[in-house]
Every structure is written in C-alpha cells, then in structure tokens.
Length: 172
Image (cartoon, rainbow, N blue to C red; front, top):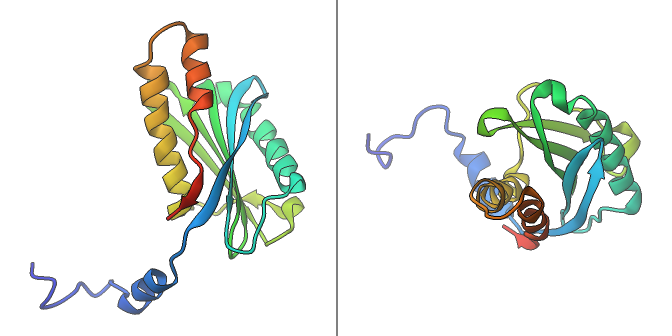
C-alpha cells in the first residue's frame, strides 16, 4: 500500500499533527526504592511543564501501591514493582507495574483530576501508559532483564543493581 496515495480512513491526520506539534519533554526523576507490602518498589515522578509531583502526591501513590500490592501474590507477583507518579497536563496518574510469573507483568493505572490525589481511582478498562510513562516502563523492562534475569551474583546483588539503575531527565 502506498500511503502517499491514500491513508486508511481511521487515520486522524489533524489530531496526529496536533499531537506532534505540541509534543514536549517531561521531567522525570527517581523517588527511591523502598519496601511496600512485602515488595521492593522503585518509584519515579514524571512532571508535565508547570506541574510538580509533591510529597502529598507521592504519599498518596505509595498508599495506592500498598493496597494494590497487598494482593500481589494472588496475581503471581515476584515481589518487584515500579511505581510511577505522573503529574500530567490533563490529570494525575499513578501506575503500579509488577513483575509476575512467566516473565510477564501486571499493570494497574489509577487516574484523577489535576491536583486532587485523593480522587485517584482505577483507570477505565483498556487504559494503558502514555508515551512518557511507556518510556519509563521500557527502560525498566531493560533494567529488569539486564540486572535481574541476566545478572550475576546473589539475588541481593542483582536487586541492588536493579534498584540503583534508574532513568531521569527530560523524557521525549
């Protein structure tokens, strides 16, 4: 198919070009690794321009993660998770990504209005990470494979290396 002749009818050229023109980087920083509900959890903040992940936001995200991870073993959790606290342009988001059996993962997305962390609720069915959240999760997939699955040494050595390997900066 020659796309220069005709685009498929579902292609929304106006929206795609609008997204392209408005695309920008988002500040991303690690918030540390800690134990939550028996899991080792590596946390990140992602911030849209003019937004900041506050201590209140991070605290709410940790409580959400604790509730979600409390049932981790029932979902096949291996005890490692990544928590993303995203102060987005259109709302606030918390993602809890857990490595589970069979080299698979479990993802929970919570969403709410800007600046109202107490209003975060499970996202609608089918909601998946945005481009910035996906960049962090992609990085974390590689770190998990490199440091834990393909790592050397004891499990403690591998988890120490996994915990220390973080992404930060202006993600595009």
